Amino acid sequence: MVERRAKAPEREVRWERMFPDQLEAAFDAVPAVYLTYGLCEPHGPHAALGLDALKAHALAVRAARRHGGIVAPPDFWHVHEIGGYAIWAEREIGEARPWLTAEPPWLHFKRICYHLRAMEVLGFRAAILLSGHYGPNYLDLRTLVELIQGELRLRLYGLPDFEANRPGFPGDGADGDHAGKVETSLLMALEPACVDLGRLPATAAASAEERFAAGADAARSSAEAGRRMAAGIVAWLGEKQRQLLAAYDPERPSRLRTFGDVERFWVRRVKPRLRHFASMQASWYDKPAPDPASRWYANWRPPDDPP
Ligand SMILES: [Zn+2]
Image 1 (cartoon, rainbow, N blue to C red):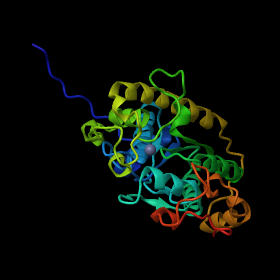
Image 2 (cartoon, rainbow, N blue to C red; image 1 turned 60 degrees about the horizontal axis):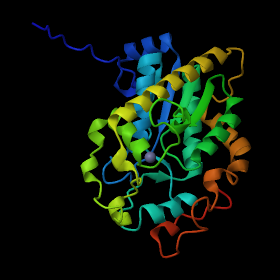
Image 3 (cartoon, rainbow, N blue to C red; image 1 turned 90 degrees about the vertical axis):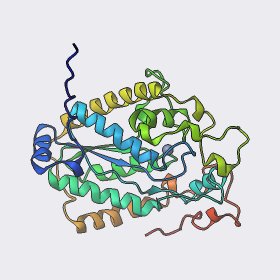
């Protein structure tokens, strides 16, 4: 007779679900943190709206279980509705179903500065910022990491998840897509209850409202491909975390310790460059501007003098 044994519960690494003694033991073992970002936006009728942050958070959870570290609460607000994002939304979402949890770049990136200040003061030695949401915002995350790294003892790396999902990895790897077979396969592997391929429209000629921003190849998604991609990304994150921890130096200065420090850093170092951020450009997608009659016109034009 086969003996049935209860599977040991997975080690808890999600900050908000840990007891304080668990959190402190995890911190003592590996003082590294994952900060994950995405937003709720149309990802096809077949995928949960929060795909981007669900995916980034679940990847970080797997990485922390395997390689150590703590996963901060996921952030489901991100850059959209501005510049090329508005143009993308006009074409891919349409006018009828505008389900976004969007915020402007200046708010998003300032909040990240505050998140990093908190991690610095708590004494983390490494932080990986993982964005599940694409468009050019990841270029700005890179810029922000370059600007802020000199102020922090904490070692940083910021990336979109597709950067760790390279061609040549086992599976279908490669560049990120939007609610196509890459993202859908990943979500099938990571959060199976959040995908239902039966909800995809039957024909390729479906309207924008019916497609709800689904990728053209979403029907070719598979959990098995998603599992292979996830394994590659988790290994990549573990290696990056080891590199960051090895680069930690307690002699480095730590200059972002108060809310005032963050505000002064923002005004001095980030604000003068904001106008040049990739996500602050009027058009990086398809055409120069949304149609003035479109709902996506309202927040399209980036301000000349962002706060
Ligand atoms: Zn996505």
